[in-house]
Amino acid sequence: GRRSLQGASLALLVLVIFQAWLGRQTVLEFNSGQSVTAHLATAMAFVGLQVWVLARSGYPERLSGIFEARGAVIAPIIAAGSIYALLMFGSNVTGTDTGLLYPDWPLMGGAAFPPVTELSTPHIVHRYATGIVGLILFSALWIVRREPGSPRQTARLLTAAIGLFLVQCLIGALQILTKLAPWTQTLHVALATLIWILVVGAAAIALLEARRANTESGGGAEQAAPRSSTRSMLSAYIALTKPRIVELLLITTVPAMFLAAQGVPPLILVLCTLIGGTLSAASANVFNCIVDADIDKQMTRTAGRPLVTGEISTGAALLFASVLGAASFLFLAATTTLMAAFLSLLAIGFYVLIYTLILKRSTPQNIVIGGAAGALPPVIGWAAVTGDISLAPILLFALVFYWTPPHFWALALRIGPDYAAAGVPMLPVTAGPAETARQIWLYTILLVVMSLMLWLVAGMGAVYLTVAITFGAVFLLRAWRLRSEVLGDGLLRGATRLYRFSITYLTVLFAAIAIDAILPR
Image (cartoon, rainbow, N blue to C red; front, side, top):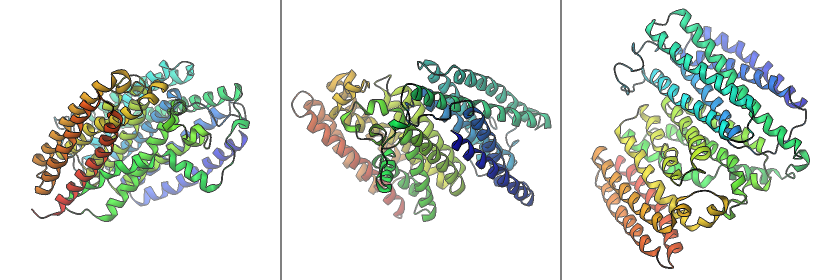
C-alpha cells in the first residue's frame, strides 16, 4: 500500500546517495574490480526497485500478505535473482580486465573446461553462469506456463526476456570477436539492463497478482496470523530454515576444506564459509517451505511448520528467503572466492527450481536428481579454499549424491502414507517397499564404490580407508537386511535403523577425511 511505496521511495533516495559515494570511490580506486561491481550492483538495485514501485502503484492499496506462492511466483523471483547475479559476474569481468582473456567463443582457449586460476575465475564463472541462467529462464517460463491461473503478463515478460537473452549471448560473442569494440560493450550493458527490467517486472506482477487474487477471494488482513512474542517469532523463522538439514549439509563442507588445504585451512576462512553456507542452505529451505505449504498441511510430519500454522505470512517468508540468498552470495564473494559464491547460488536455484518446483511432484526419481543440490556443499568448501574445481571435489559431490537416495528413501519408507496423502510420488508410494529397498541396496553399492575411488584419487591415507571399508560394509549389510525385512513386520524398524545409520555414516566418513588430511603422510 501507501506505506510500502513510501518505504520504496525512501530506499531509492538512499540508493542515489550511496551510488554517488560509490562513483567517487570508483574514481579514487582507478576502476578497481570491486568498486566497478559495487557501482553496477547499486545501479541495478535502483532500477529494480523503480520497476517494483511502478508495478505496485497499479494495484489496490491493501493486498493480502497471506497467499499461495507456487511456481508461478517463486520461479520468476529465482530468475530475477539469477539475472542480478549474472550482472555482477559480468561487471567483475570488466572490473578485472579479463574480457579478452580467452580470444575464442564459445570455447575458452580451445577448451570447454579450462584450468581455473585466480586470474581466469571471473571470465570462466561468467560464461558458465550465462549458460545456467539461460536454463533458469527457460525453466521459469515453463513453470509459469504450465501452472493454471498464472498471469499472462508474467509469461509474456519472461518470453521477451529470453528472446533478448539469446541476442545478448550473441553480443557477448561479438565482444570477444571484435576485441571489445565500444559499440558491443554499450549494447551489452543496455540489453542486460533491459533483461533485468523485464524479469523484475515478471516477478513483481506474479507476486502482486497472487496477493490480489487472495485478497479478492476473502483472504486479507483479517486472516493474518495472531501476533506472537519476539522469541516465538524468532523460533518460527529459524524453523523455516530447517536447521537440522543445514547442519547435515555443513558436515560435508568443512572436511572438504581440510582436504583442499591438505591440512588445517585458515580458521577465519572456515568460519566465513560456514556462515555463507548456512545462509545459502537456509534460503533454499525457506523457499522450499513456501512452495510446499499446501502439501505440508496434509502431512503429519510437517503440519506444524510456521507457514502452515500462520505464524509467518507468505510475503514475509519470501522476503526472508530472498534476503538470505542475496546475503549468502555477497558474503561468500566478499570473504571466500567468486567460485564458491557462484556455486552457492547454483545450489539454491537447483534445489528450488529443479527439485521443488519441477521434480518433487512429477517423478519418483525426484530425490535422485534433486540430490545434486545437497551434494554441492563439499564442492563449495573446496572452492572456498582453492578457487577451482578438480576431480577430488567432483568425487566428494558424487559421494553425497549417491548417499542421498538410501538416506531419504529410508525416511520415505517410514512416512510413505504421509506422502501418499499429499500426492507426492516418492518411490515407496509409486513402486512399493520392495522396489524401494532394492534401489536402496543398489545406490549403497555405488556409494561405497565412490568412497573407495575418493581414496585412490585424492591420495587419502589409512585412517580414511579403514573408516570407508568398515562403515561401508555396515551400510551394505543394513541395506541388504532391509530387503528381507520388507517381506516381514520389521520394515519400519529396519528403515528407521538405516536412516539413522546413514547420518552416522556420512558424519564419520567426512570426519575421517578431515583427520586424514591433517595427519602427516
